[in-house]
Amino acid sequence: MDNLEACDSTGKNENKVPNSVKKEVMKHSKVQSALKKYNPSMFSSNVLKKVKPLIVAGAAVGVVIAAANIFTGAVDDVAAWAALSAALKI
Image (cartoon, rainbow, N blue to C red; front, side, top):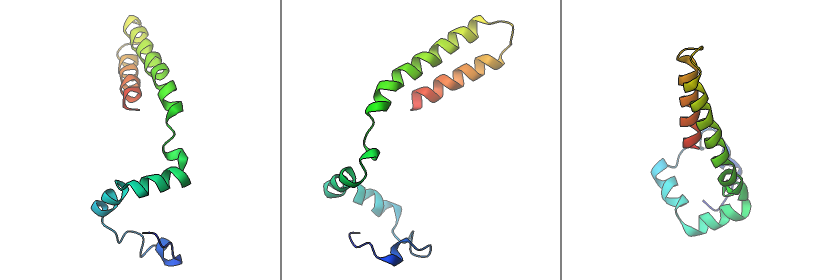
């Protein structure tokens, strides 16, 4: 895994390593430190931690407004609950 030869990224050799092996390799501390060094955006979730409560609160307000709005039928209720569900999965 530490030698990046030209043939490593070709289509025929790309998926020779089983997914179970890839998952075990990703758990290794040296691999994690290398990822943090060379790909820090993979671990920078500070923005997401700050924005997620705002997204969830906005979706919750949308559910309340959709429940109070009786003129549009059930379509807005479904959309509001879908937005809240998606916001909670982030």
